[in-house]
Length: 285
Length: 264
Ligand SMILES: Nc1ncnc2c1ncn2[C@@H]1O[C@H](COP(=O)(O)OP(=O)(O)OP(=O)(O)O)[C@@H](O)[C@H]1O
Ligand SMILES: [Mg+2]
Image 1 (tube, rainbow over the protein chains, first blue to last red):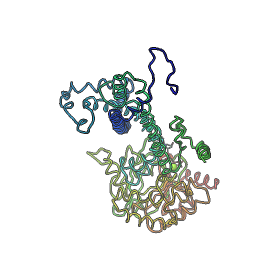
Image 2 (cartoon, chains in turn yellow, blue; image 1 turned 60 degrees about the vertical axis):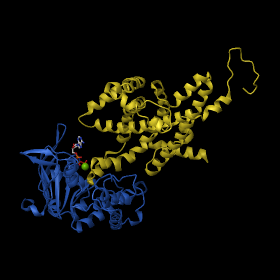
Image 3 (cartoon, rainbow over the protein chains, first blue to last red; image 1 turned 45 degrees about the vertical axis):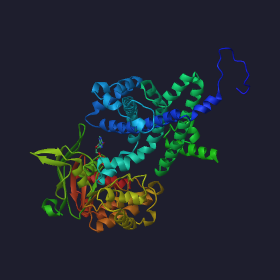
Image 4 (tube, rainbow over the protein chains, first blue to last red; image 1 turned 135 degrees about the vertical axis):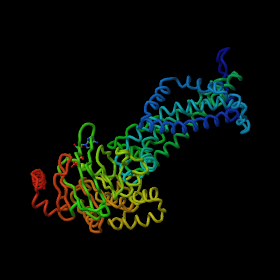
């Protein structure tokens, strides 16, 4: 690319970096980024809450309901779930009410049918809930049952014990996989493009197509997705460190580099932690 | 302390004909025990005899299948409805539990909280005390168990003996009517046992009602008002310590005491 006159064949198209830079901060793209982040954050939060509820439900007489939920959402493609939930509103007679909403325009965005956004949000949330249930289970079940008994014997209710005693300890186990889930979520939201949600992928791919410069826009998209996942990597490392510090018998700290390169914290084995931690801190200094 | 003669007003624990099954196995086979206000009852007996299980029934950490348990006149865990036992709502179980302190063999301190935070947690969130009130009484309790200098230490920075003393302070912070101890010193290194027993003894001297499961026969001799021997899910003998240790009536008690004596 440095030698601009390089012959690339008659039909070969020249890759143009100036297009990359020109479109990187175009309002349409930035809006796409915002929609992507909002969608991913909302769906991850909702999915995490659903995961906790499913975990709790599995411990009651309604366990079959929870198992059925997990069976459905793990057993069908996310794309089909999106198809289902973005198209369910006409059957509920809600489409007109939803899509006459100008909420996105009011916020200064391009028009997105609310039914599409809402449907995508629900699909991502429900799907995530099915996976978060397992992550919640692993985190909560890792806590010594003596903790719940001690809390109960102090007169704390189940809910209070969960909130004050169990979940803060389980967070240490839950946060690494939860962080990985959110990393996936940021990227997976691109599927919503197929259903009329103008998120980052949709915005970028659309421009690329209309300009006949798909590769340049693909680079723009890559830059933005990498920026989001990398920033999240920072946040995740910070959270993991914080929760390791506040709970005492800790697990290994995952460095930021480990995090973005996918060398995750897979071993909660207490025997390995000291050596791993020593290696990490030794390597950094 | 003849338990049959206890009036309702002086009775703190009243367990009657308690039966407890784990699956098909009956681990408590009709246990009846009354504990008077201010009394210290020590439960001894061979491993697997049901001591822990019985103690856990007293604050409804275990469900029972037959019998009744009242604490200070209140049913724990169950109501009688038309002659049937019906399990209580969680909230009312919690309310009775708040009045019963329990100390576990393995301490069960909350590892993500400092000693002080461990102690003020329930007073603030269950009793509704203000942070300042709770802290003031927590610091007094830490001083009482000799750990005022460890208020801000996390449990993993404390020795076993210190952790157990914090656990006792945590239970006392709820102002319990009754304290249950399940082998509070069994997980400790021998040199740390004394400091915990000392706190328990002091508590007994202050008039706390206590039910203590222990293998520490010295403690039983010295502190107990009554020693209860359990074997195979039943109470086989009970008497004041002097009488029980010097003149056990049951063959199985003699065998058990003989075993303990040889072990020490
Ligand atoms: N959760 C459980 N599930 C099944 N069986 C149990 C359970 N807990 C206790 N048991 C059984 O109940 C019986 C009584 O146990 P318990 O722990 O009450 O005895 P213990 O007198 O406290 O013994 P130790 O001195 O060893 O602590 C034992 O046979 C034990 O195996
Ligand atoms: Mg026991």
